[in-house]
Image (cartoon, rainbow over all chains, first blue to last red; front, side):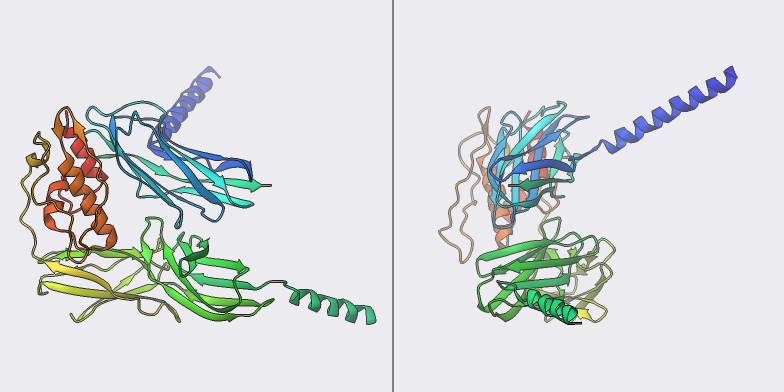
Length: 163
Length: 287
């Protein structure tokens, strides 16, 4: 009986180890939570872009988003000035629902957990379901002289706009 | 019997009591692409295609009269497709449905091609569709098949092409559906540049003077000025790099042929593009 319990414990530990490994691999990619909740028509939607974990210092990022221009209007873009010492591009194209912030900081870059890059402030335009997508053209790059892509900003966030 | 007839009459009456005009668009495009509906400078709305490229869109309250709605797709990599125009006359309190709309593929291409190399053209279209690319006046015709993710690729070799201006057009077909030919996309074939020196030292030379030769006056667009951010770190002025980077990106966005002198300065990883990756490399070198 004791041997069986030992085996079960070993198997359990192995299982936890594999789950941890899979989690670490999966965690290389940063997915946004899917549902942002209900928001009122007169409220403000705040969409924060964060990199949760950096295995290596990063020195440049390009945050590209697409948003539902039928339901949302992008009012303000606020970049983390500690990271974005230099801004290359900061643009909002409300006519096609696209926004970009790109730039970074010199060597040695920055290594920090839960590093906030950009905050986007949206104003709901009408009742319905609104979404914000990360565009695959977004990049988070390592301070390694080769511009290695460290994270993939990926996913969609959805809000229900109510009266 | 009287009651049933009465209900039927009531139902038919309800269906015609729309109260305003409704225009429905049903069609196919690249998977997960965003379809835009525009007329002139007015955007009536968008529709997000599903994972196999199907989309539907109902637009209410369009103005009565002759309408000319332009549709195009933008894929998840922000590549844009060509315009498809739907002309119709809208009458008040009516509903019109346009089904089987088949949009043009999105496309990514360079406005400059290099001799004796591969010219890359790719984009997204209906999964499984046949994408034809005709290089006008060259006799080159490439047929590609879009994958399940909609991606197609129609590269050509430029070995046998003379230097000069060219254009290509695209068509997508699946079964009986066809997008028709797109308008022409222009590009210019130039000599392959000499490889730049591995260390782009000029951009890191201290001093306030920009690298000579960088004046933003392309042919036919003289007088265009845009504010350029200055990047000065520890007495090292790299204004010329950002100028080059800005110039390259601005011209590329406008579809204007980019002068190689801009490219050779800001393309630090030699991939023939000036993008955020080059900026990352520059930041790394600024120890």
